[in-house]
Image (cartoon, rainbow, N blue to C red; front, top):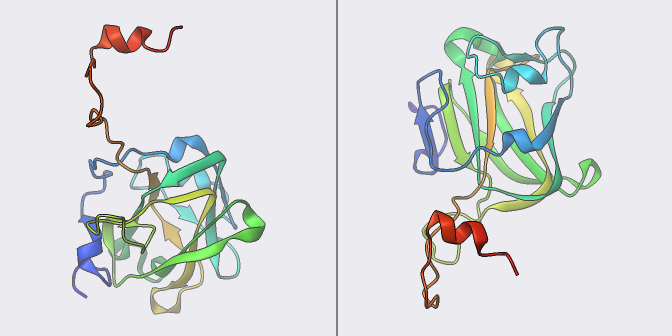
Length: 195
């Protein structure tokens, strides 16, 4: 496909090297990040440093993977990944698998994404299960998310990923319909939990 993904309606694409400004909150900093392998100076820290000129460079047999572990169960709505086929050629992932679970030993595949010559930030839902309203996708609740690079373009062995973010669901900050007094001022909220 010319837009770089297998289902354009489910993806947000941004050709800019800076992360796109999206309404979903970035929850990446709440987790511990590790990678299956890396070349010295090109480790997991390069995935989150915000610099499009740095990248995680794997160094070992496929599949390669990034493991993101949270200290508590969290809701994950989307994954945003920055890839550059123009710069990385055969190091560019062509097939991603997303796994989730309560720990590294019980991870289950929840999504597979095929990419064709991606260039820029690609943001997609981790779930393929529709929400109750049928107008979006449910988040995944997990302690661990793993992004697996199952294959690279042109059968490349090592991989380059220039950025990776996990995004949580948009929190509904509206007032419930059954709330009789919609006090939302800063002063009210500051004291609302004091008893």
